[in-house]
Amino acid sequence: MLQAVVRHGGFAQAAAAIHKSQSTINHAVHKLQNQLGLKLLEVIGRKAQLTTAGELMLRRASQLLDQAGQLEDIAESLAQGTEAQINIAVDEVYPYRQLAEALQVFSETYPGTRIQLFETVLSGGSEMLQAAAVDLLIAGEIPGGFLGEPLMQAEFIAVAHRDHPLHQRRGRLNLQDLQQHRQVVVRDSARGPRTDAGWLGAEQRWTVSHVATSVDMVRRGMGFAWLPHNRVAHYLKRGDLRELPLEQGSRRYTTLYLTYADQDRAGPATIYLGSLLAATDQ
Image 1: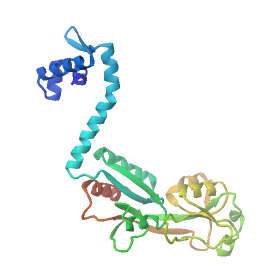
Image 2: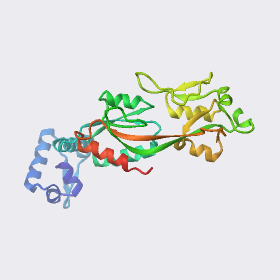
Image 3: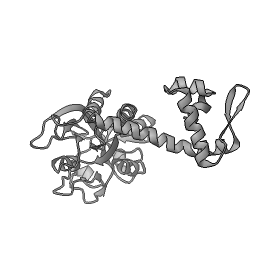
Image 4: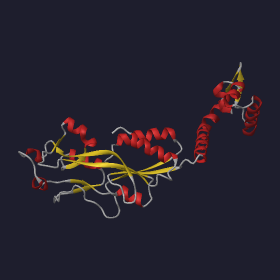
């Protein structure tokens, strides 16, 4: 009430703004001053203004007021059956920009719902879904016993730094040519049996945990790799990386699916987040 008096310039204006009687606000502010033993307001002309002590107290209390408002929002959401938290596993192949945009829109509609985001590789996300650790999954496979919705087709391109020895060879490259050089592979994030997807059997394989690390190593000329087109398009256009001229298989494709842990029992926030991810521009 004190904040409303200051913000709106007087008791009458505050009463109209927060739908309380003027006498109620007046009584509450005087009671607050008596409890604190401080004069918080003074009337100058026709306008109520904070004293120096009032300015300090209200400034320090602003965070508490914000937290109180957030608590009210959360309580209202929970009363409507909204989830307090959503766990989501997303394969690192999924374009980060699209994910970030969906989460930003979601946060504006459900500001009180927490998000636990797990960035996974290959079968890591499916393992989490089967263990009931996540509510939503975006991955290149649909675990057994679940139904998924196709979101997009991810494209992988065999690339190496423009000065890599593989680009010095004439003609098309074959499997034997590649096996003589270091391949950078992203590790399956699953804890159980893992998949060595894309490995060609090269003796000099380097295995990393994140797509971003793989991109950085290839950019430094440390090896070749099949990398998501959305992660390397800029470097290909700039000429830092070049696509490898393979006899076959220089480009690979996989479909990414959106899968609910249990869509029938999912709450409104989970359904809304799933719809944002499904509607995101490809």
